[in-house]
Length: 309
Image (cartoon, rainbow, N blue to C red; front, side):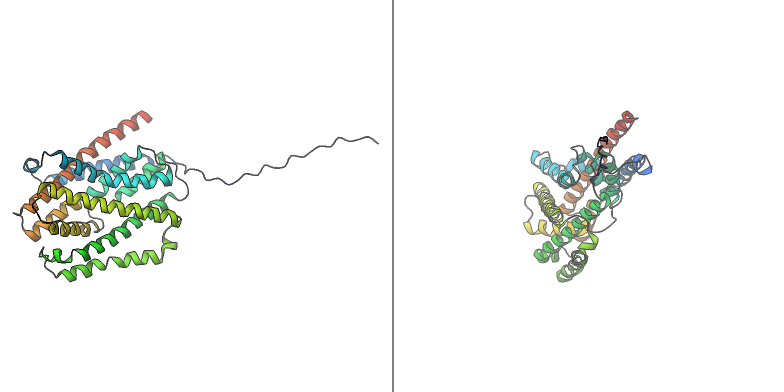
């Protein structure tokens, strides 16, 4: 009997499931979204600048290095905090800070939440997006709104007497109750968090803490900026104005909220008030910064797109 050689049939290779980055197709979202939003940013900024006396506004700007340091920190704190969030979620590269600056500019002067659409298109091409990328942006935006509502309510309760001094045409208690109504969406979000939010709870907690620190920092920098121009004004004024600024910032789909805020103050305390002049000047500076930075970032993006062809 002949011995037959034994042959081993190789077992089929088992592929372990892996998380892979989102593939990007050269469609409308990837190719035309950024240029269109860039053009919208420039047009909106130029349109809103038409009502500002730039020469008179620049005459009021302090030359103190302290003022410009606070201004720069207040401008950069929001995109930097978001970069920290998405750096952990998607390994966002350092260039992501420029995309987040464009996101802020789009939200401020074009349309609320239009920046999220731009950032989603940018991140699909430049970041390692794992899982549900749109869900992550949604979670970050929802948590930002929830934390901002809670902070606004807390500040309104603390400064309700100072709000009454602004003569807003209503009782300070009514203002506080109105601000408390913002807690309802936040409570609904907390109750339905398992259905609304997609990120794991530890990640959501970390993002909420970053949002809280960002709101505290932006409010503090805004008050310091006002105080640097008018150091003699009482602290109660800045507390009330910070609360009013947060209230205005919670209005949805409203572009250029700093201009709206300055206009509201002018309506309540008078257009000839020194406080109104200071707030209008700072709001104009924000707008000019949006315009110049938006133009620079647009030029950089167009050059990058041309080299990529």
